[in-house]
Length: 246
Image (cartoon, rainbow, N blue to C red; front, top):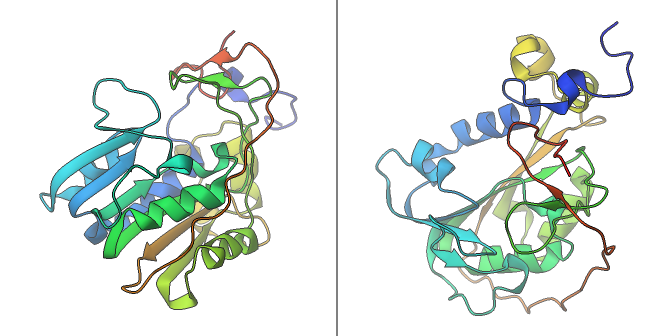
């Protein structure tokens, strides 16, 4: 039995499309009309380019460190210097679990939107853990702080001053999808029914669409700082994926 093992298939090397990213793509396909106007994305402009379809007239990229392609250099958890009411769309993929002060990040993400602007964000329920951090060229090691539950995400949204009508939560995954992702089975090796079954008892990914209310006004949360170990981080490599080398 190929799943009766102590390490992922292929040694953790990238094999096709990860199941968790397949679910994100399904979510984006359903909300491509929200990718429009002046738009911001964390890390790259991949989503804005793929789903903008000409509706995006200004695609900007936010990251914590300067590098080619990054137009907004800021830490989303401490983005006080970025202007409010600026963007029509903000895409935050696979970031929330790496942010200790996720309340502050969500506050700023909403604040940066124009009234009526849309935030598309995801929250992994299961993922790998970077035990000694990983260096992705951001200037400091990244650690995994959170694996989310649907109830936890809804509480985050409500603490950010949102009401039930301001957001939609979509839950993707099931027990086998979770195991497949952890074992490094790509989405292509799952059947349509295995991918498509959503089990709220075993979610893999939570995707959220937020529409900023016209009268949104929330006090900035108190900032929280994380303790992290003093370690030499692993180096991120797209080929080795979640099992980066030393």
